[in-house]
Amino acid sequence: SIDDFKNPLLIRDYISDKSDYEKIIDLYKNKKKDKSLCVFNVTMQNHNPYNFDYVGDVKVTDFSVSSQVEQYLSLMRKSDDALKELITYFKKSDEPAIILVFGDHQPHLPDSFYEKLFGKNPVQFSREDSMKEHLIPFMIWANYDIGSASDVVIGNNTLENMLLKAAGIELPTYNKYVEKVSQTIPVVNVNGYMDNDGNWHNYGSDEPDNIKKLLDDYDILQYGYYSDTDKEKLFGK
Image 1 (tube, rainbow, N blue to C red):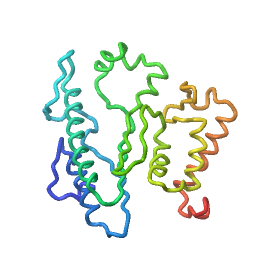
Image 2 (cartoon, rainbow, N blue to C red):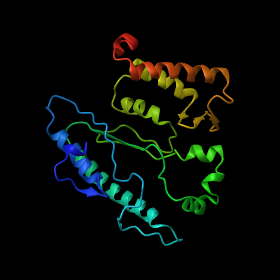
Image 3 (cartoon, one colour):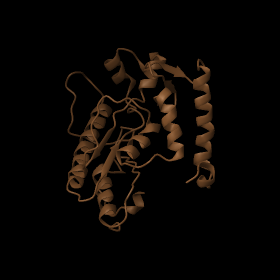
Image 4 (cartoon, helix red, strand yellow):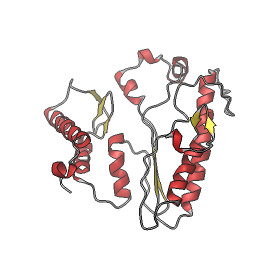
């Protein structure tokens, strides 16, 4: 938390990505040599709202935009610089290292900005448009060869599996079921799911029996996984 940082660089009253990543490096430097380190790290630098008194170095010249848009883009520029420093450090590490970077939704910017981009106001968005508001890029980088891929479309719930497989770790029982679900339902989010043909669906509306069964079992399994303290009893070792 913010209390774990001493004299961090703040941006808009938030811990900057630069100081955040430096904390990760510090944790890595101070771990026991025969131990691994896994950090689930949530950054705050770029979170909305974008009405802070912050002037960045990115300007939009193609068309008129609000200061909120330029603020967000400037923050993303800062994030790029910080990520470059993090990767540069772990490139030189003697131990294998993997970095997974992802988000959970696109930025909450003024409706007028999206209207200029998409030709319609967000209140006019179709179901597919609303689903795509949660479409974000992600990246898995390693300082050793894990292969390469591009234009991969998956749900956030399967990112963990992709990370574990890249690290050469066998999928636990729970993750094996997530993998099974993803073979039929490659993407799920708060609004609905996408099938293998790229079509978006609302939950509980037009689900065929096989999809409904997968989602119902997933719902029960997920509840148990996140609420039951005795996971070995529920899933085995």
